[in-house]
Amino acid sequence: MINTNQFLAQMQEVLEIEDRTLSPDEKFRELSEWSSLAYLSTIAMIDDEYNVIISAADFRELQTFGDIARAIEKRKA
Amino acid sequence: MSYNPMDLTGKVILVTGASSGIGRAIAIECSKLGATCILTARNMERLHETLAAMEGNGHIVIATDLTDTNAVTELVEQLPKLDGASLNAGVVRTILCRYAKIEDVRELFNIHYFSVVGLMTLLLKKRKLAQGSSVVMMSSIDSHLHHLGNGFYGAAKAALSYYTLQLSKELKEKRIRFNSVRPGMIETPMTTVDSGEDYLEKDKRQYLYGRYGKPEEVAHLVAYLLSDAAVWITGSEFTIDGGVSV
Image (cartoon, rainbow over all chains, first blue to last red; front, side):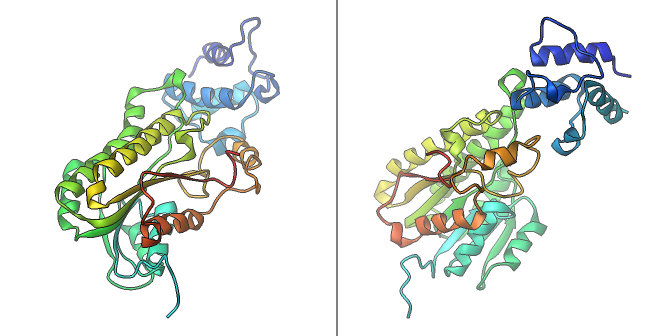
């Protein structure tokens, strides 16, 4: 099991959000901090921290931070 | 007899990265212009697919991993005297500075720079390049235009471009010409995978004609540089990018 709170904290760091915490239900593409750099950073962070690669095609299907966490979970299993 | 200053009849040309994309298109184009080609890449099966699409006889396929020094030595030993070489072996890898792993950066430089240097050194030492031959390096617009995540790829290509200049001066007495080609985004298996989200669609709109290039479009330029029509061209870099850098 990956630690959801830890993952959200990692996403917060990727997105450089300091003034609030993220929730699993939040749709990341709706955030003003989301960008192509944020996308590449997310993929790189997940590779770095979890040793998991999510393809662009698979990532496109994900909507919320929780979806990303579950995608990592699935690939680690 | 028809007039064709780009005729390659009688020329023997080495094409690396010939198993797909731009390298494959160059091999096919050179064969149509009359050249005999020696094709190399790692994957023998896909090299044969290229071969099947070529015209004329006498082409040779040799499977080689250009990052393997021993394999390159073996390759060069098998080569006849060359009138041209088109070096295209390459991969792309998106690496951000913040998450860069030195081994990934090193791998990019191995493929795009060190393996070319290793191959060229042997070709020169073993005198495999004929007087008046032409070498065309496949660089990229990324060598001078930065695209997010492709900085290390661009740096390796910039190193390759510089190496091309070095070669052109050092080999001037032998009249061996060295040029590099810098394509923008070309629709190939290498570039169209995994660039993320709707990035590709947005990116295409930056090109003046709203589309990416085709491998054949780059192959025409390379074939020209390999031909005697380009005899006064050396030490130059050619951008072919559908106007994206305008």
